[in-house]
Image (cartoon, rainbow, N blue to C red; front, side, top):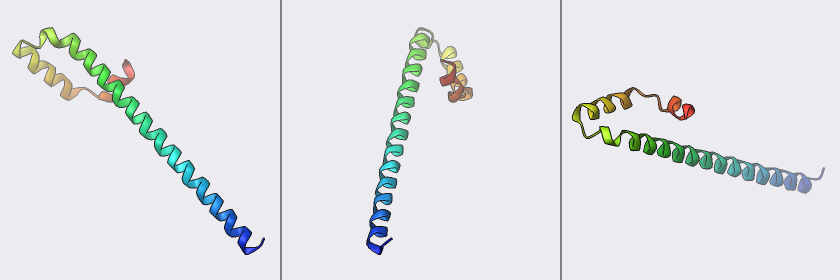
Length: 79
């Protein structure tokens, strides 16, 4: 290969690599946003269910204790 052809090939490979990296970064950001939305939705649903009971200080304290022990990853996978 001539030097110019080799340089052109390397430039094209670099551009393709950058496009692919940008695409994967966008996919990761999209997935994180989707997971954030799902967590917010599930927490909102749970708070709607618990809202009538939270007026009692004892229940409120118990719910805070529960949330400090909950593994959010397992909570998301369960629902």
